[in-house]
Length: 413
Image (cartoon, helix red, strand yellow):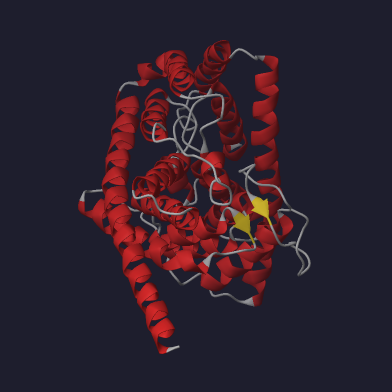
């Protein structure tokens, strides 16, 4: 019996140090990769701002991305859904995903496609984690942990939010179930990646200048009302992205022609509106919303631009556009319910994120890392309401909601 206990203890110790070693490895690699990606995105964005004529190259950029994916991928779609589904199933994540999503996202930002960068983070990290597991011939359980660890690393490096990155990777695949054995490696990887990316010059996303009112009954009720509206908007966001891209693909089935036509529509809309606010990720607009400034219809226009961009084949993800839509919506709507526009922008930023990804704990971590702890009670209420009232909609088709949002029971999965 003593020998068996000794062997079991030794196995635990070996497994502990093994997973820490892999976490540090992926954290370091993810930090360097994330910092390089962050720098390329910044360069592409700045280049587009300095040379507005690059917008006219959008049809060419769209075509290049479509050709790359046609030539370098099989019939199976290589996207964020593949990474998320691989956390539950035995699915191969090809290493070619790394250069594909890296280059295509940079091209998207360079020519002004309306997309974010979190999709790239999850795909870069997930692909690296999976292929490290294969390289060392780890079993499927350990490989799944490495996929989450890689996702955490690059997400953390890009956004500078290690706690959000770690918890998001744990929550996103199967809502209602969390694999706690992956928490330590995800946290270690995320913290390591954030440290390295910060050392290499990647700046974190934060708005610590936002001041929150005391969480009295009046403010809490107003925040709750705004959160209900954000939950409903999250449904609109998910349905528009999903149904809108499907409709456009149905209307124009040829991927090459669709890339060109959608790009022409986006260029025309940009010139007609006379602003570049809806091109690229749009974090500059989010920053203005956090100062209480937002155009009335900004959230609608960003959603439409993002839908057409994704239908065209541009890459990057929908979470940063969700930050844009949520913060501008909160900023615009808040005065009508008696809230300060800056507070409304902050609540909208987090609440819409929660509604579209169904990850309340990660959303709460996001609020802490981006805005500090002074508004924690307000964000807790906001995340809870947005999660419950956003229904069973999601940005990710492969995401499974395991537990009912209304009752404590398992759903049929």
